Image (tube, rainbow, N blue to C red; front, side, top):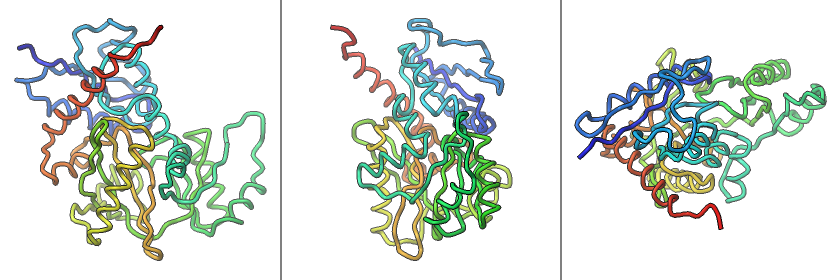
Length: 334
């Protein structure tokens, strides 16, 4: 029996390039040589494919059985790569075009969650990239201040790994935070601050998704930012959160419901905030290509639940091929 040929695409043009490289290497190392033939595809920060573009049109790659895209953030997690793989008629790990795009956009994630009655943190959106309308800073900041008290969190709507996120404690800080976030996206999200605990929960599956036991994030700084995650390496995690069993169950339930609300397939990681003052859980965001590095919690949560890294990769590849087979039965013409 021939080996399954797996193309692992990693790197990319986003601000999460370095994280993607580490995730890609971890997945390549997990592909057992007796079962898989690994085809590493590296994309440089400038967008150059090494070894060259391999997915230009349907049928161009008859030797590729399945693709594992592990491109975090823009140009990989946002539906662009997924659209290319759909055009090439190749099975791939993770959610499809719509789910990837909607999950990447924090505003649309919130809108879809609200439509399903799922709890999200209150927010405002600023369209900082509109070339036809100059932002009225006084008006916009006054609107935000009328609704929320400081501190506030400011984020690019489309980015991950906490890149471009700031905590604003006053008016001057808010403007600086909006300007910083606007470097990374044309839309900026402003949220009220939640004081409490942070959790993450892994989800896997197609039509019957399952949630792992969640983990608690223990930031070493004021909040869990990029430096805390990947540079300093000082953030802590707990795979046995000190919260009641019913809270664990509710996190798992909400994670699956969020996964369904965004029409996800394959995998996702859902992040939560538990407000200390009210005891309320909030869905913070959903990541459709979570990290697979040595410190990434998506695989660690499944490992804690009894699913080792290599078996997790196996399962994700099989889910990708299962979905592709189901879609092959669809008609695209009369």
